[in-house]
Length: 72
Image (cartoon, rainbow, N blue to C red; front, side, top):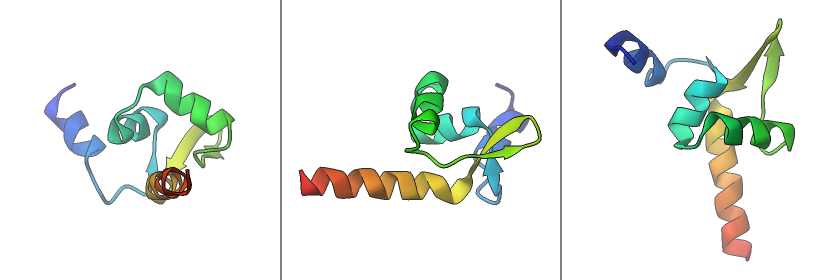
């Protein structure tokens, strides 16, 4: 990954993320990210033929997981 890709991946002003960017931010693999999307655990939206994840969906996902952990 070159520096322009790295700075874009870490850009907090992005509203929609690619699956790869979301996976990188969550520190999970791309396949795991797609599995979470299919299971409805991670919100995503179609943009034409592309799949994008709202940046705020990552915080919601983590908050939901933390709440589940506390309840267990």
